[in-house]
Image 1 (cartoon, rainbow, N blue to C red):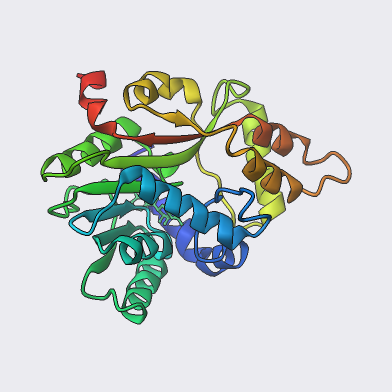
Image 2: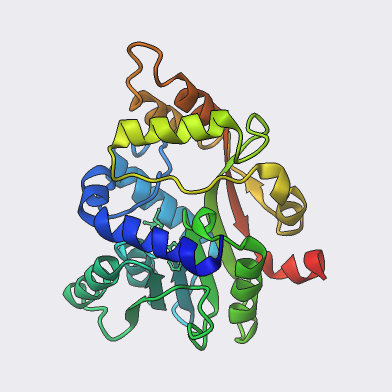
Length: 271
Ligand SMILES: C[S@@+](CC[C@H](N)C(=O)[O-])C[C@H]1O[C@@H](n2cnc3c(N)ncnc32)[C@H](O)[C@@H]1O
């Protein structure tokens, strides 16, 4: 499928489901990092994941952070408030970008953080001066991942950043699903829709093996063990009464959580 049609499909999903996602996920549209501090509180867990990314990237006040797939803008605003960095958030969703901009003004960050409704992959989208880039649960939505990584690297390479510059946090299906066309995968996605409602769409899957070389080079940290409570949280939501969500549960159990930073070595991998 072409970049643009994937982006259009994602755009309409996020625009139509904006309010629904806010009900399910609060203002962080990601799975969070459940730990002893968060208990089973989703809001605390999502804040904890954002903080984890911010610390991992060593964001400082001199940085300009690009949030690829910024959702409601909350994670980026939290990072900029915490560190004093400037920020740019990009999302395909117009209500998402609007909410980001409104929240920036409310939080007195209107002059330092901007939100744009655009396709990250578009040639027109080239924000200057980016020193750090985050993509929390948005990488799996991009159709051409090598191109996307190249663009991520190109953007941060243009400025003088220090330390790790790119953090990608996403879910990667483990070996149990050999192919995105595997009927188990398709069944698992259908079940996810059954659990979260018709507005939910899980558009793509990629196996972790596709990324093994990349993640080695990028010094990926495997957070699967750390994320066990996160996995359990989402599994408990499946509410299995009659076994109908079995494939979803199998899917959940095979998820791997990776935190990758410093994708700067990406050029070496695909040169
Ligand atoms: C699961 S949400 C994650 C939101 C946010 N990162 C968070 O953690 O709360 C995925 C986001 O990726 C965005 N997205 C997906 N593909 C995109 C693209 N090609 N360009 C810009 N944003 C994109 C969607 O609009 C949505 O905001």
